[in-house]
Length: 142
Image (cartoon, rainbow, N blue to C red):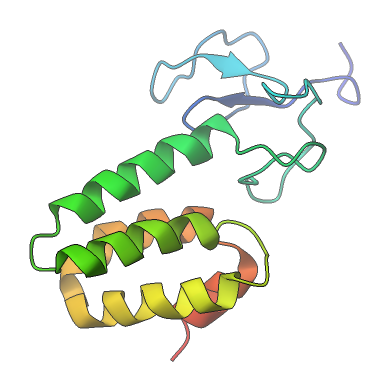
């Protein structure tokens, strides 16, 4: 297979796999896929891993995993009120895509992150991976 025909391989956890003969991810051992599970569009070369399929709009498996992780992590933040945890969980889903609600959701997330201070470093790192460009500009700029 020539380089122009080589398929982009990504594991279900979002690791790009460079080794063409690899059947499982060398980093995490998960299944490797070469296309969107929803519409079967082949993955393209990426500068950074997208969160949604550009053909059908479905969330990629690694995005779903990260969302679930972030929701569970937010649930464990007992220093937040129940309302704050609910707002955070709902807003996370909105900052993945570029929609009219993205800026509002990003502002909500930023306020909660600022309230928590240094306790949120793991949460922020994971959130950064799946945030839209608009959300990144709002959440990570002063």
